[in-house]
Length: 408
Image (cartoon, rainbow, N blue to C red; front, side, top):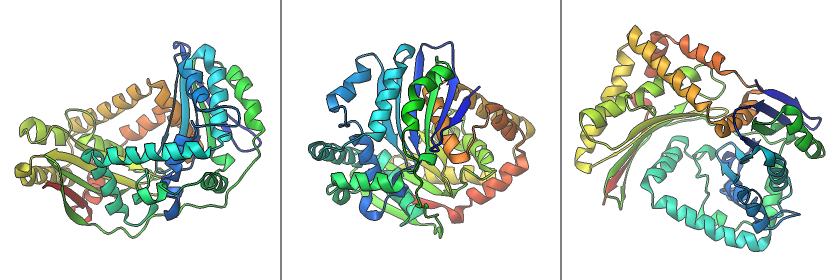
């Protein structure tokens, strides 16, 4: 069972002891992401994630990278549209080193000018790599179509013209204007007691001055579906279909999670995989995804096929969407779908590094961490009528944006 402690400055510490592992996973989750940038700051949050490893008041790059790796541990970070996470996995005997290092890179980064220049080129190469990967770029471009000029539609990596001009002062100003200690969580999952975990990290975290920001995220509104076809230097046509969906706070989100799992989730027996790959052999992979944000969500379908089979593949996708809109699931189908979704969630809980990050994000987004049993109960209570109603809203063809990459 997890435990939570809130410090006087608003920072929260969440912990769950797991006695049958040799490891401890810990990390900072900050409620700051690419949607919190201005247009001139596009890519700054992701650049900050990179620069956290490039020097602090106490350490240079080598000392940061070598601190845990030399002990067999892992240090990592990532940026999403709404979160930045700095985290580590180590043998339980090295937890204190991991916690101290994570504290240092999160709060004491100095953003050395020479390192900014080097890392700028690294990020430009990263951007080029993503442009050369159509599977990745179509997802970014579909985001841009669905969310139009809103910050949620911008690429997390930023633009070449913005990344090319960031200075040391830009980082300090961005952090100063966005960091809120009540929107920051240190999460720990592993073979360590709550008392011992607190003993290492509570003191340093308590010394961070309380800080509240007046910044408020701009909500997304005014969605207009679009249809776009682009030529790309690729050998396979790609298609992305998407639209806004439910937020993290919408009570229907678990029902949509279940519907999405039936349609194109990770299992090989999803309806889209069975229809397009197993029955007709038109695709190597096809998936649907549902990603909730704080005020809105995103639903999308992605697949690739030969250009000559693209019309047939699109027709089959629409056929599966229509089936979900028009035909109610039978009781056995619904029961099996629920069991599958619950099983997948239960297996995900066994990934303790991911669970640690889920705890941090849940505490920020909802102010609490719901036990899996409570989530399971919401899935179990979902009716066939619920899914039919959600399918008719979310899968409405008139409300879907479509982006197609055609071969040159």
